[in-house]
Structure formats: C-alpha cells, structure tokens
Length: 149
Image (cartoon, rainbow, N blue to C red):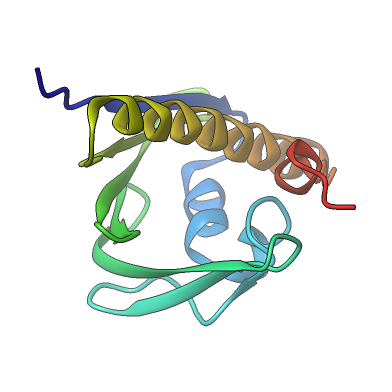
C-alpha cells in the first residue's frame, strides 16, 4: 500500500492579512520566527535559499506562485514537496493562515515520518509568527525545539 499524506497546520493570527502575508514573504520578518537567513524575498519564479544556521542546513525554495495577501506556493526539498500558504482575511481584522504540505515520497514508514515532522514544524512556525505579530515576542521555537549543544 502506498500512502500520500497531506499535512495541514493552521492558526488564527490577530493581525490584518497584509501584515501577516508580509511576514511570510519578507525575510526581514520571517527570520525572526523561522529560518535564520534568506537570500531574498519570495517572488514568483524566483529561487531563494533559506538557512537554519544553528543546524547547519539550508533549503532551496522555488517560488511557484505569490498572490498578494491570499496565497504562496513553493516547492522545496529533494525530492520536492509543495508547500502552500493561504491567508484568509476575516471581518474582525484577523487572518487565518493555513499551511498545506504534500508530495512526500519514499517507503510508507519514511513518508509518515516526513509528514509528522512537517506537521510539527509548521505548527511551531505558525505559533512563532503569532507570538511575534501579536505581541512582538521572538519565542525562538524552531531553534529551541531541537537545541544544538
């Protein structure tokens, strides 16, 4: 049996959609809650490199679509998986962010492990974004999740 999990993580962020969207496309903001370095802003057709310097790893991110204040679609990893962010502005000035990651490959056990890791990682990213955007607090969740001695 071959499985094809689709990972979804979501979070309500109590900030306007323009501010929340900008936090994910602008590395000056994103580096405050997710990766530590980026080669540039997310723009359609562009490839950027994101680095998690505390772990000595990086990823090339191929930007497939950017719809301002609505959607971001990227591919990353090798073999590639797709990651889509959707941003839904709500009448009360808040934003619902949904992250969907799919396209995992390999043996079933490896695919399940990748999906579980993805779910946990994107949940931390959303919680970090929420803390930063709502309260100005940098929680350092990604680095503290797996501290390097």
